[in-house]
Length: 92
Image 1 (cartoon, rainbow, N blue to C red):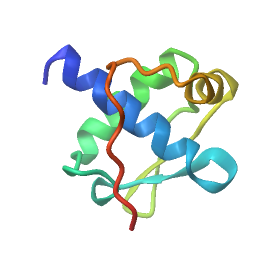
Image 2: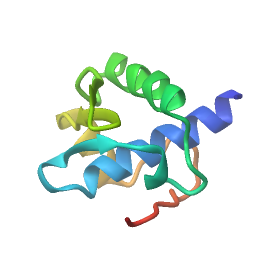
Image 3: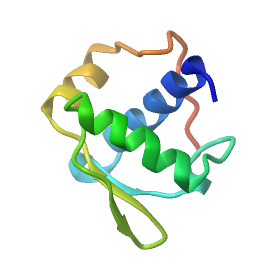
Image 4: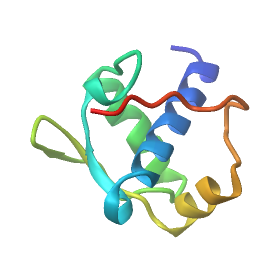
């Protein structure tokens, strides 16, 4: 993975959480197109936590549970994306 791919995955995760009720959810690979491996979800989630955007990832129901915090919500509402391209989400 390179830095550009990581930024795209960060955007995907942020926007997926933003679209969930309560701005939180259990992220599983099938939520994304193409699917993101669980290990990559965890790695990116830890990076988002270090930026103050989400809570610490917690293993639940076959995925990683995260909650979007105020800085992450603000980033999603402002339309600021780290990759510069719109995220692609897959509805289950």
